[in-house]
Length: 305
Image (cartoon, rainbow, N blue to C red; front, side):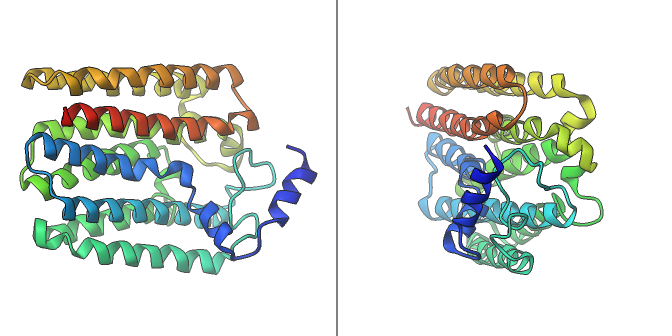
């Protein structure tokens, strides 16, 4: 995209407008927040314990937490000067001047507050211990890109996604409906978490040169381009292989249906490898998020069958 075209797009967005906030929420990444709850609810239904109210509250909390995380990342990447005129990815709201830094920070905490408000309803279903879970989620959400030692800048972004968008989101969404922990919830958490990591990898793979220049140490900056390429491929393969664990329970559909995910996953991986670098990699993030949704739907359908 030429500088003229880029400037034209930026100027077409009014400062602090609804469109600016929508773009800052990064809709293409929101599957990472919704899919874990979808799969957890499918697993609860598999055991005959699906409950719509806690499932809905978990979905709203997860979605708002994802948006707050995106707002926080937008603000703190600007503060830490990780975004500049050489950024390859979609323009950031604060760095582009669409949203004032102070407003973005306020917006981040407002979304967190609303998320916690809905989260309070989960105390009825999971007990006061849910407050601890919620606090840990919020603190970790901020620690991802904020503070003197942001997780995303020290090679821990992948671990963060696996833990919170995988294990925590799936296991506790299941627990709040079934009132118990089950090893299959952890299997589903690992499945979703590994596929969700690929959203981060697609972003960091594209930005590896700029991240290296600004001192942001993602796993791809630390271990190299080849690591990102192969980690992306094998995350998806391992995620599908984990689903075969359901064969232990005699459940065939949730074991085999997710294998269909490998078709779009492999196609997106090949495209990412072929393009290799530059702005042409931007669509990979959207495709990866779509693939995560496909995996979540296939696994959920399998559980319902």
